[in-house]
Image (cartoon, rainbow, N blue to C red):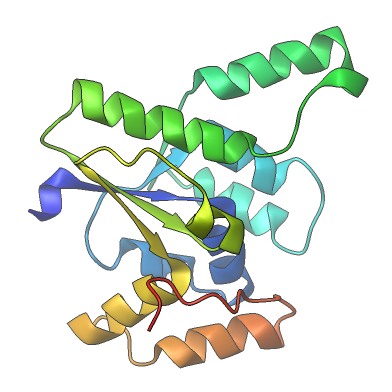
Length: 174
């Protein structure tokens, strides 16, 4: 099963784990990590406390960066008219594009969409049968339950102490 699962992290979990100096936790289950190019663009396009760390992590060769039509379209719009280029929700669109591709091209591969934003939890994503979505908090608890992490609460605490406004959302709800 492990070889058939691919982790698709969104911006929120990447930023939270970067604040906690815990990006390595994404590798604990042994699943390949596919970083959607638009998500990478979103976490590195402006200087933030985590942007350089995330750029280095993505360039380390341990993750696959997946090219999407969403980023290509965004770059074309920026070049044509920067003021009119849409920026909101493009990471989500690129992940949806990737999940759709998984459903069409790789039906035996399961995509696990890792998110943090409460808006995403309520968003009406079309989740193909071979895709799942899970919050950062639930992922950390999963790692703890598997014995791959001593304390999910410690990671949350480290991120908050470093300045991250960690989502209060609990998904799935308790």
